[in-house]
Length: 236
Picture (spheres, rainbow, N blue to C red):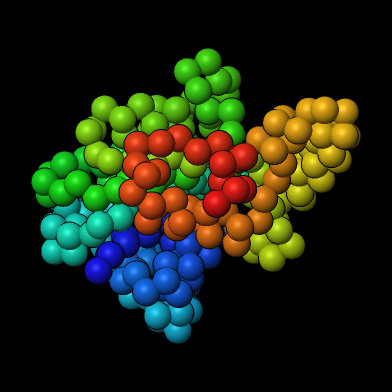
C-alpha cells in the first residue's frame, strides 16, 4: 500500500493533492504547521477527506524521526510563499522568504529523508521557466531545490506548471489572475498561428487539474526521475 506525506497540504494545490490521493486509496498524511491558526479547521477538512493530519514541527531531527516512523512511499513537497506573505511575516519578526520556505523547507525534507535512510519518490512542485539561467529570486530558488534533489540520489518527479489559478483561491492574487488571463489570450492567438507547443507549455491550469496530474505521475513507475513541463502535466 502506498503512503504519501504531503508537505504544503494547506496550499491551493496541496489541498487538492490530499483529496486526490485519498480518493485513490493512498494512505495520506497531510502536514499542517503545529502553530497554524487554522489547525482545527484543516484537521476537520482533511479527516473528512479520508486523510490523516500530521503536525510534526519543521525541525530536521523531528521530521527525520516522523518520516522513519511513517516510512512513506511518496513525499510531496508543495511548499511556497509570496513576496506579500514574506513582507507580512517580516513585520511579525518571522522569516518566510523564498530562501526560508521555498528552498529551506524543501531542502529540510530532503535532508530528513537522508537522515532516516529512506528513498521514497520525492514529488517536487517547481515552476515553468526554472533552469540554470532563470532570472529572479523565485525561479533561482526553485532551481536550487531541483539541483539539491538530483544530487540527493532520491527518486524524483519534478513538475513545472505555469500559472495555477482559479476563482476559489483564499489568498487574493488579482495580479496573477489578470496575468494568467492575458497570457492565455496571447497563447490562444499563438496557437492559432502555429505556436501550439508554446501554448501548451505556458497556458494556465487549475489546482484540480494539476493535483490530478501530480498524483497520476507520482504513482507511475515510468515517471521516476523525470521533469514534467506544463504540456506533459496537461496530458496526464
